[in-house]
Image 1 (tube, rainbow, N blue to C red):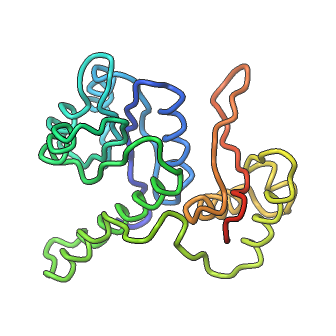
Image 2 (cartoon, rainbow, N blue to C red; image 1 turned 135 degrees about the vertical axis):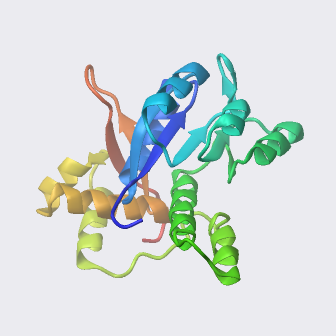
Length: 225
């Protein structure tokens, strides 16, 4: 797969939730958001013009069921939904969903699933794979550890970024962390995304009067780095 980002389609009937999930995706190295939409029809339109690797799909959409979308697309999908009916869960898995996350879930849970998906893709990137590769790929899709259990290697820069957010009286954007710490924005973004994945930080969206919402970060009380 090299350095090419995995392109993700986000489908949720609530535009704020769609933007939040898109923010989590785009904060992770190796991922890009190709589109964030709110209906089946707009998802189908996006698929017609853009190649996606993964779709994050809600079940409840204003013009139909997200399960139908998962069934018809020719690429990978995960369900992010409040639907807990057993029939719906079975239908989604039968349709081909690689994961089923029930809302509300912690941001780090989605980050861990996406990290596992990236490993799944890497393990199955060769034209021929071994039985061990297959077992490891399947296991990667189902993280066994609790959200926030991943460990970030010790790093002075990581500690600097984490300390900046922890000591701020208000949530901080990557640009603000960059200014506070003196590291580049790209470096700040990379460490912020990793700290979100471990559960040390929480990411949310900051809505202004105009333009796209901005990702902002705050510390999770009691969380270990």
